[in-house]
Image 1 (spheres, rainbow, N blue to C red):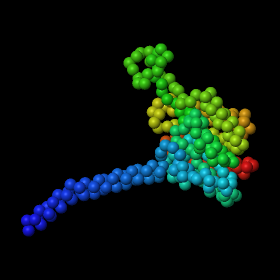
Image 2: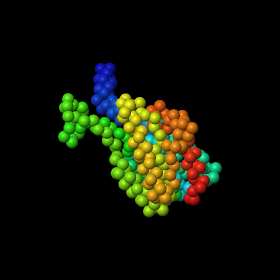
Image 3: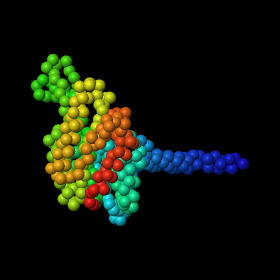
Length: 291
């Protein structure tokens, strides 16, 4: 009996020393793998409509499956194209695709908008996010982030300081993210590259803004609107010089002075109604364009 008890005790000890750690380790590894998989799934399918990078619906496109799609259209831009703060189904590229399906059952409209992009950012991803899709048409909408103004505190000697100081000689200046000359250069470079690939282009101007609530200084808010008008005019001139179709969203949104009906609470980004208006305006323009 004592021998049997000894054997049982030895077995229990052996289990605790050898087997249990293995089970625990496997359980921990399984838990870690599950967490890793969950994080990967969350990155592929964000729960928010506001995130950096291309829409997940765009990243999931298989290039080989686009061969039979005609026409293929890439909407290239910033958060307006992305559809900031709205579901993908309400983004203007998706609405445009639905409108065009009546005329082109195999049409494919690709959303290549990234929130926060300037014309320089767009230029740097032109090959991967536009040319690689081999589109028949590209619709460009940029400028909101380029013309965004910021307060710059100068130290009085031509230098800039990050934070306001007690220096009596400090001056407050206003700078845009991308100056107008640089904006024009990169915009024209983008057009040139797309045209060299024998792809048609439509340009869209900046939609009107109503003054961002975050700009507590009314003078800055008013200045921002005027600067956006300058960048919008620059896009129009580029379109004329390049003999391209240009859609003046500023005027389209302001028909009957109802721009506020098409913008979100931030006074900048189009809401669902505004994005639908953009899609319909492009659709009407495409009726007279030859693919």
